[in-house]
Image (cartoon, rainbow, N blue to C red; front, top):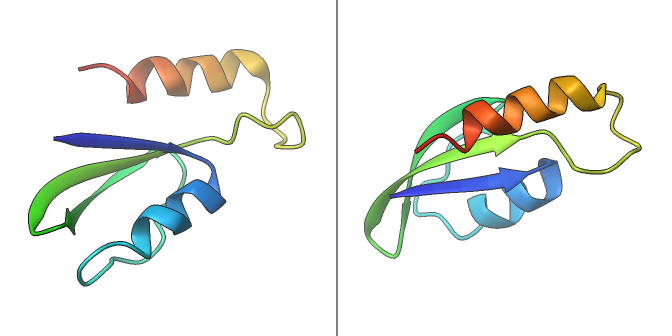
Length: 69
């Protein structure tokens, strides 16, 4: 199973629910986590906020790669 978050706060919320949470992953990286005794791959994508300093084209590229199933 795969989980995807957008931004630091969303990632932080998921990590607080984990058994033995890993360190906060960097943007555009994936880490293994356990929720409710089940393994998942958590991918952190860039925030959707306009306040996040990344060009729209770059964000779109990150999302395309991060959401590929």
